[in-house]
Image (tube, rainbow, N blue to C red; front, side, top):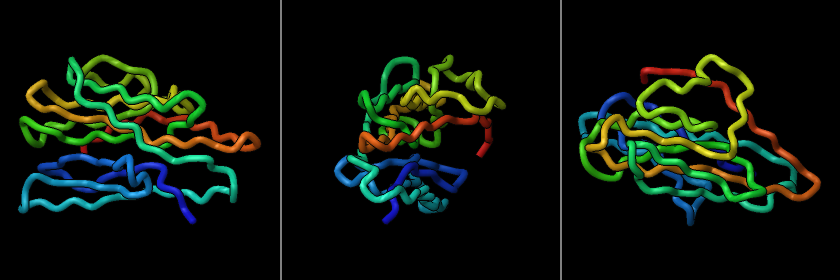
Length: 160
């Protein structure tokens, strides 16, 4: 079968973000805080060779100071996707998430326009202001000893 590697969202208003529940790391969950707006989950999946994956898991981190949440995969794991999810406070205030080196709060990541960036097996999730509490997430995989996956990222800035 296929393995969920990341969870995205299509929508533009009242977004509550994306979430992969640790007990069910093969399901992409999205939400909106308004019945007037719709959102669609985008489950990005890959098919890996039989026996190549030892485990698939989602790491979750709660909100931290400076509106940023850093979520890391366990040592020996590979990051395949990042999430940010609304917890409480002001709605429609999620800024987004990105893999790789942690950048300044509420500034475009320095890697925008750069290809082949090391993910450092970590995700950075952000809220626009401290009035919104978020949780960050990282989708992680561990592989059999004879299989290796090296993920890199390309920085892109979007407004939706």
